[in-house]
Length: 113
Image 1 (cartoon, rainbow, N blue to C red):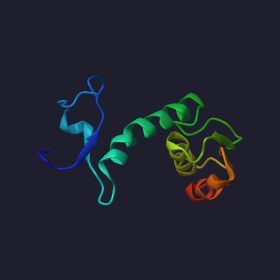
Image 2: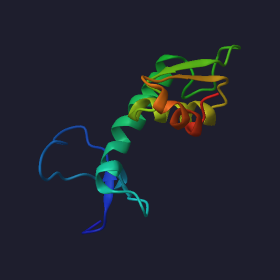
Image 3: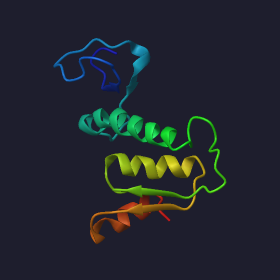
């Protein structure tokens, strides 16, 4: 992708100052998103997907009749991604736990019920 702003995933060498990654593993950075935030996307989103997979909600449709989900640190990196992914997957209610009352509005804005 040359000098274009991109983010992506690699299995090895991610903490290097330079790394060669197949283009298939890269995505352009959306307009308005900073490089540090874009760099964090794969880590938090893949961690959230893994948690949903371990809980039986992904990649297949949830096998449980109870679609309620409890998410700790719902306003943090992985937690905020879990809230949004849970909504997309049709899980409800999405109950978020936050560390302080100042984070309640953020958790609600992400989709916590």
